[in-house]
Length: 235
Image 1 (cartoon, one colour):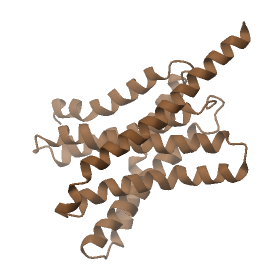
Image 2 (cartoon, helix red, strand yellow; image 1 turned 180 degrees about the vertical axis):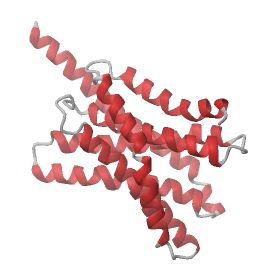
Image 3 (cartoon, helix red, strand yellow; image 1 turned 120 degrees about the vertical axis):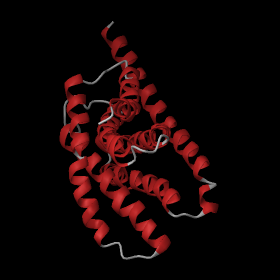
């Protein structure tokens, strides 16, 4: 195994997790719980691979339909389901999940754990002869997992803290199917082999970043406001 390729593979996810951890300044999550979430996110690659292999057997669709099935069902559904499962089992009911920003933090840590292992598989082993694969995945694929996670965490927090049962159920469902949709579109554009479709890839990525930066900024502001409000009450 090439040490250089290994470092290239793990760096993007580590940069994202450290950056988010430092951004959560007012009510930072326990490092131990974050590490568990990250590690289990990494281990979720194992069941994901098995399920993706199983679902691929049923891909009997020709051409563009086959690409659609792979993008949305094989990759999108399976990967987002298991990353979300980690958050639900590890952090969602924890006492430390006590503000809306936490949903995004835990979802990103689970997703970056997943993305770390996936990136090692692609960069170090599967496409080790391609000198550009590390760069491509570092600026597109790994951050994309983070963007999908922001959407997932945003809706998980809405579900957890909503006081209206119907809104809680709706947000809970969206925490799964919205990341699947975003993930599926991302992969489908790359898999469909339609030149006209690739034209919208960069605008789509920019749109995803813009949309989820707003979600993250909103919860960062809420976290700050909550911290200031708590501090004022103690005076």
